[in-house]
Image (cartoon, rainbow, N blue to C red; front, top):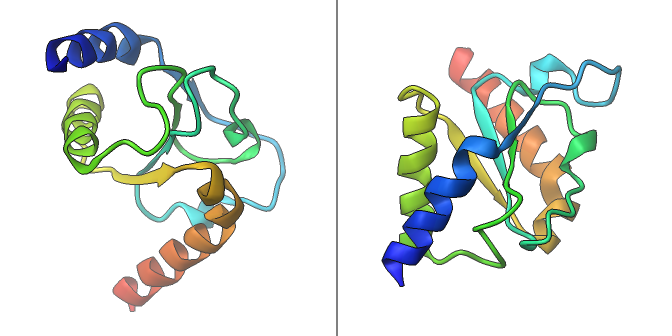
Length: 119
Protein backbone atom coordinates (compact mmCIF):
# COMPACT_ATOMS: atom_id res chain seq x y z
CA UNK A 1 0.00 0.00 0.00
CA UNK A 2 2.78 2.43 0.90
CA UNK A 3 4.58 1.65 -2.34
CA UNK A 4 1.39 2.43 -4.26
CA UNK A 5 0.91 5.72 -2.41
CA UNK A 6 4.54 6.74 -2.94
CA UNK A 7 4.38 5.74 -6.62
CA UNK A 8 1.20 7.74 -7.12
CA UNK A 9 2.71 10.70 -5.31
CA UNK A 10 5.87 10.58 -7.41
CA UNK A 11 3.74 10.47 -10.54
CA UNK A 12 1.53 13.36 -9.43
CA UNK A 13 3.92 15.73 -7.67
CA UNK A 14 5.75 16.94 -10.80
CA UNK A 15 2.50 18.01 -12.43
CA UNK A 16 1.17 20.18 -9.63
CA UNK A 17 -0.30 23.43 -10.78
CA UNK A 18 1.87 26.24 -9.49
CA UNK A 19 -0.36 29.29 -9.31
CA UNK A 20 0.81 32.85 -8.88
CA UNK A 21 -2.19 35.14 -9.22
CA UNK A 22 -1.59 38.80 -9.99
CA UNK A 23 -5.14 40.10 -9.81
CA UNK A 24 -6.09 42.69 -7.24
CA UNK A 25 -7.82 40.95 -4.41
CA UNK A 26 -8.25 40.88 -0.66
CA UNK A 27 -5.08 38.79 -0.42
CA UNK A 28 -2.16 41.15 -0.76
CA UNK A 29 1.47 40.12 -0.55
CA UNK A 30 1.56 41.34 3.08
CA UNK A 31 -0.47 38.26 4.00
CA UNK A 32 2.40 36.06 2.88
CA UNK A 33 5.24 36.98 5.23
CA UNK A 34 6.59 33.44 5.02
CA UNK A 35 6.56 30.92 2.21
CA UNK A 36 3.29 29.02 2.29
CA UNK A 37 2.03 25.97 0.47
CA UNK A 38 -1.71 25.42 0.55
CA UNK A 39 -2.54 21.77 0.02
CA UNK A 40 -6.10 21.12 -1.06
CA UNK A 41 -7.12 17.82 0.55
CA UNK A 42 -10.83 18.07 -0.23
CA UNK A 43 -11.03 15.36 -2.85
CA UNK A 44 -9.15 13.56 -5.57
CA UNK A 45 -11.29 14.88 -8.40
CA UNK A 46 -9.33 18.10 -8.70
CA UNK A 47 -12.18 20.50 -7.98
CA UNK A 48 -10.40 23.31 -6.19
CA UNK A 49 -11.50 26.60 -4.74
CA UNK A 50 -7.93 27.73 -4.20
CA UNK A 51 -7.53 29.47 -7.55
CA UNK A 52 -9.08 32.62 -6.14
CA UNK A 53 -6.48 32.86 -3.38
CA UNK A 54 -3.40 34.91 -4.06
CA UNK A 55 -0.17 33.42 -2.81
CA UNK A 56 3.47 33.38 -3.72
CA UNK A 57 3.15 29.67 -4.26
CA UNK A 58 -0.02 27.62 -4.09
CA UNK A 59 0.22 23.95 -4.91
CA UNK A 60 -3.14 22.57 -5.89
CA UNK A 61 -3.06 18.85 -5.27
CA UNK A 62 -5.20 17.31 -7.96
CA UNK A 63 -4.85 13.67 -6.90
CA UNK A 64 -3.13 11.44 -4.42
CA UNK A 65 -4.21 13.33 -1.33
CA UNK A 66 -7.83 12.66 -0.50
CA UNK A 67 -9.98 13.53 2.49
CA UNK A 68 -8.08 13.98 5.76
CA UNK A 69 -4.64 12.51 5.22
CA UNK A 70 -3.42 10.93 8.44
CA UNK A 71 -0.35 12.25 10.26
CA UNK A 72 2.07 9.75 8.74
CA UNK A 73 0.91 10.66 5.22
CA UNK A 74 1.14 14.36 6.04
CA UNK A 75 4.75 13.86 7.13
CA UNK A 76 5.52 12.02 3.90
CA UNK A 77 3.96 14.77 1.79
CA UNK A 78 5.76 17.44 3.80
CA UNK A 79 9.13 15.81 3.13
CA UNK A 80 8.32 15.40 -0.57
CA UNK A 81 7.08 18.97 -0.94
CA UNK A 82 10.21 20.25 0.79
CA UNK A 83 12.29 18.20 -1.61
CA UNK A 84 10.37 19.61 -4.60
CA UNK A 85 10.89 23.19 -3.47
CA UNK A 86 14.64 22.90 -3.11
CA UNK A 87 14.67 22.41 0.64
CA UNK A 88 12.78 25.60 1.43
CA UNK A 89 11.08 25.26 4.80
CA UNK A 90 7.54 26.10 3.76
CA UNK A 91 4.67 26.36 6.15
CA UNK A 92 2.08 23.90 4.91
CA UNK A 93 -1.58 24.71 5.46
CA UNK A 94 -3.66 21.54 5.15
CA UNK A 95 -7.06 22.53 3.81
CA UNK A 96 -10.09 20.27 3.98
CA UNK A 97 -13.74 21.06 3.26
CA UNK A 98 -14.25 22.89 6.55
CA UNK A 99 -10.83 24.49 6.25
CA UNK A 100 -11.82 26.19 3.01
CA UNK A 101 -14.29 28.20 5.08
CA UNK A 102 -11.66 29.05 7.71
CA UNK A 103 -8.75 29.95 5.46
CA UNK A 104 -9.21 33.72 5.83
CA UNK A 105 -8.94 33.39 9.61
CA UNK A 106 -5.84 31.22 9.27
CA UNK A 107 -4.19 33.70 6.91
CA UNK A 108 -4.95 36.58 9.26
CA UNK A 109 -3.48 34.62 12.19
CA UNK A 110 -0.38 33.81 10.12
CA UNK A 111 0.06 37.47 9.26
CA UNK A 112 -0.39 38.62 12.87
CA UNK A 113 2.09 36.01 14.11
CA UNK A 114 4.62 37.08 11.48
CA UNK A 115 4.20 40.73 12.46
CA UNK A 116 4.74 39.85 16.14
CA UNK A 117 7.95 37.99 15.27
CA UNK A 118 9.26 41.04 13.40
CA UNK A 119 8.55 43.43 16.30
